[in-house]
Image 1 (cartoon, one colour):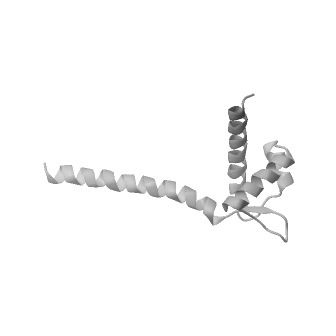
Image 2: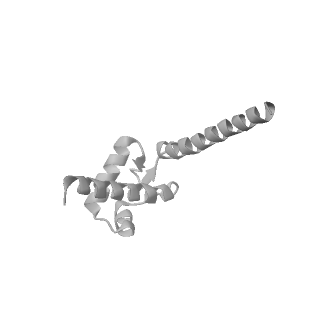
Image 3: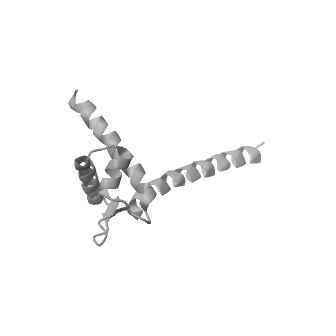
Length: 102
């Protein structure tokens, strides 16, 4: 297995963690539950959560030990929706320009 393949597999697993974590904004989730639910080893989940915390996409509730997504994670998805809205506005402007000049 090449280093590139290993990196791709790690990236894919990390994205699976992000998707799973997104469903626990209110309740939070433990490393153990993430590992079991995603069928990944605990060590990988620990490293993934450290990376997500460092990047600002996750936080650990020290009183419960559970992990939650942060608003920063959600902002990425809002940016996607905003880009679609911007494209729709451009499309409407083009339609209006064609209607006006007919």
